[in-house]
Image (cartoon, rainbow, N blue to C red; front, side, top):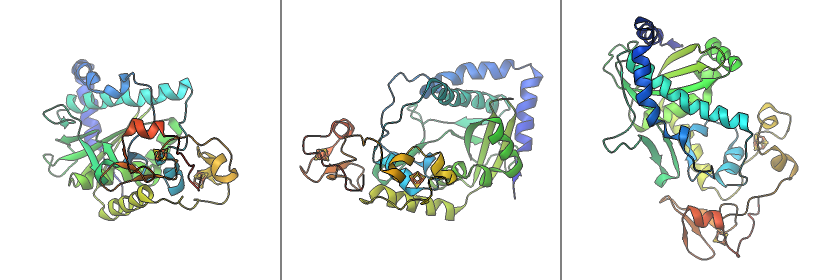
Amino acid sequence: MIYLATKTLDAMAAAIEVDQGALYRRYLGEAIHDVTDAYDDKPPGFRSHFGISTSGKPCSRALWYDWRWVELKRFGDRMLRLFNRGHLEEARFVAMIRAAGMTIYQADDQKKQYRVSLLGGHYGSALDGVVIGVPDLPDPQMPCLTEFKTHNEKSFNYLVAHGLFKAKHQHYVQMQQCMGYYKLDAGLYLAVCKNTDRLYGELIGYDQSTDEYYQDRSKRIIFTQSIPEKFSEYPDTFECKFCDHKMRCHYGQGEVARNCRTCHHGRPLPTGEWVCDQTGEVLDKSAQEAGCNHYVKHRDL
Ligand code: SF4
Ligand code: SF4
């Protein structure tokens, strides 16, 4: 069963039309400053934690390659602008929500963005927000997780036709784990089509089995010292065809980045740190990136 957030989308549309977007633009001007990822000028590097947003990917091996910093992917300008667009759209969603009379909470009193942090910090995600006043809920005062996503036209049309669970299962999985962490029973998924600016809204309920299944799987991926099985033995399978790790995984080709996570001696601890089994040292992020002269490439890489 798919629960469309029709009243919520109608409220956002009405709020924009009534004053031709004046209030919406005022809120946009405020929200844009909070979307710090959109104007973060640090060069992107390896991510310290395993992101819950990726945990719904079907292939455990692909996730392990990312977690173990096997390769720092570089992107072309179009992709980088697309990622940036995704961040910028967050401010537009926030402005629409506020203009429609809902309240959104994204950070605590110290302006620290709400996060999920598990397994000592190895596993986590930032939250887009928690909304109060969602008109589609039986009790609009019920707090509701919200997640904002951008789609190209093909992906958006598929979402409209099939709903979140089927069309974007990875997003569904991400939301379930965030809802579980904050004990929220409802989630509002909002999507925009980048080609046409059409909006889609869907409400989901909490699904404990999905939350637990993916948390358990991610925990196994994080702590295993052996490479997980391939998702498929066939490189032409849909998953493999578009996988960043295809050449290494199926053909054993490509350079392995030299750092403590690709080293035989590097190991994550349950407390959230990484340790070197050769030297006994606990390694911070810069030490992990630097590695040392005792480096031995992991046997599975
Ligand atoms: S190529 Fe296929 S099996 Fe290998 S990591 Fe990628 S998705 Fe998994
Ligand atoms: S041996 Fe060196 S490269 Fe390997 S985990 Fe220890 S500190 Fe890192």
